[in-house]
Length: 293
Image 1 (cartoon, rainbow, N blue to C red):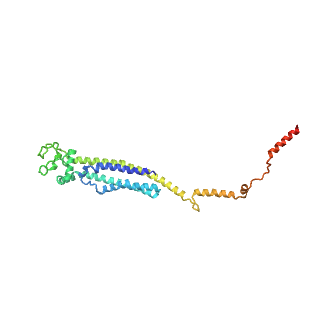
Image 2: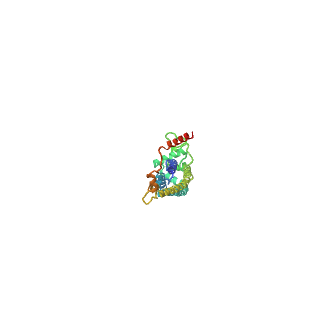
Image 3: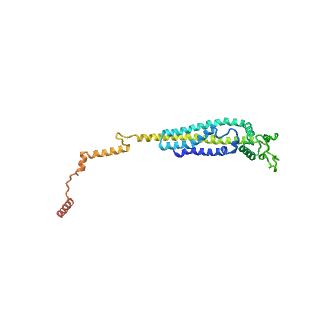
């Protein structure tokens, strides 16, 4: 199993975290929506799952591959599978929760606006920013400021044209409410997270788990073959290569101690050889030639 494959899910998690951070965590419009705090249990599970998958599980996979451990490799794959099922359950939960949030957005938003706008400085600043950026006024419209009772003056953020000095009245103001703008933000964010989380990330996770399972099985087979080869010592504890060397050495020794072998090695064959054989042969030829003459 290649170690670089284990970093692929971590990279996908980092990209998903970046997209989620830009559209959900660091967007000021999220703080205006009721029941969307970052410390609720489902978000806490999401933080833990992303941190685990992007860090601890990858370390476990690297250690398992380096140590050639079957148990650690199987544990690495099972933890990734559990996180995948956890993502599916979390997505199913948020599908139903999102529909409920859309139904309750307008009444809860109006109640929160009436209690916090003008009394909570942070919330007032966020609402003014929303009204300026989205060109809207109030939750459902300018009537949310209760100008008929004199409780609220029309804020400058609702004005199309800046009012004159020493005037708190708008010459012209935005007519549409901000609840539709927040609803559009919620739906666009939910669509983006659903596409990234399910259509892309979950699909890639499933493909990765399938390929990883095949590679883990193949690696486990190689580990077993390697362990079987290393677990074949003879009675003296020698490894297979040493056994072959010892058998070859014993064959050479047996050949050396045989009588016929020792005779061949100890004494050369006795052959009578005249040191002047060639000269005697030439002399006989010479004498025979003279007799013929």
